Image (cartoon, rainbow, N blue to C red; front, top):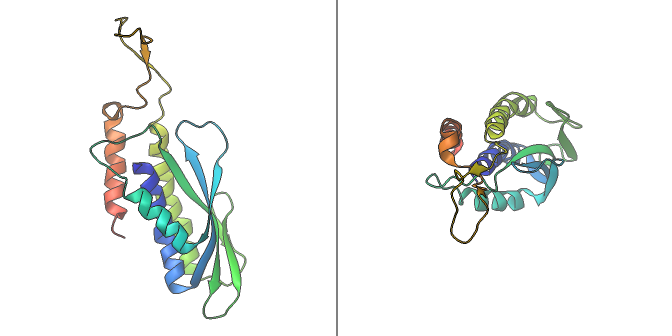
Length: 180
């Protein structure tokens, strides 16, 4: 849940800025990539900012630094969202076209710039660390028989001690952005 919460927090920071300064944020589309999934990036959708915020808070509460569970780990990326602008009225869409966000309306350049520099830069680091956690291996139990004739190969999922440096970097990033 550490990577889930961290990647969602980075999105939350950006959406919060748009929601506070520009207007209502709606129709949020996130990409979700699971550590064990080889398939396509499946979309996760939220109709409103508050719906996304509720989801983020629920995931964020599950972060446990003592037991980093990598078995169900995923990363989320911001794909697109709509903003109903308070000042000018009207609805515009902000979408990630590859590694660059653009808008089809009068969105403030400073906020788009923040998405294109701050968010993408930090997200790419989280994604890099996320991929370092991948280890498609089983752990051999040294040919010892386990009670109950359990197969000699045990799927541990991913054990934190093998990825201590990577997990520590993720924890540091999480702590850095936790209260923003």
